[in-house]
Length: 170
Image 1 (tube, rainbow, N blue to C red):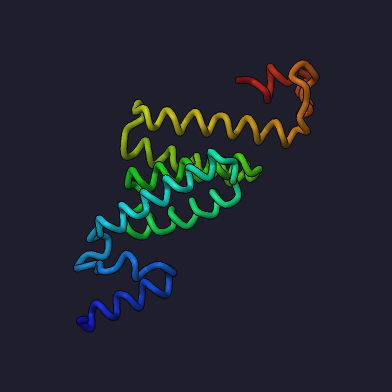
Image 2: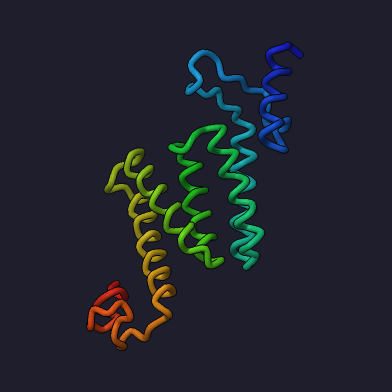
């Protein structure tokens, strides 16, 4: 093994536990240029599919942890604007929402939506999907923060309007 490859493995293994599985890659020249290891990307796609299966079985906490790990590796390997990273970010934000971490869900949906608009454009189906997820997460967060008011009750924000006409607007 070359000295450069040994150094690269050491640097990556200090950051990621499974780094040896997706080495070798070395950033050459411009540090923003990525040499993508296709087998590592495929492995991350398989792991994302497994995390999705956990979600469908109702194992939300475990799925959330897996999505967090996968997203961290994707950010390192292919960057924030790669379609795989955007998909994982959307699913992770959904997992946050399901597990009651609504503020984190809204923040990640906002970040993902901005990236989708940048990468795919504002009228793309993926962007629209993430935008809808953001809208739902915001509504759910606002509803839970307001104490779960009845839709026909006066909104707890003090506006005097019915909840459904104020913060519960769909």
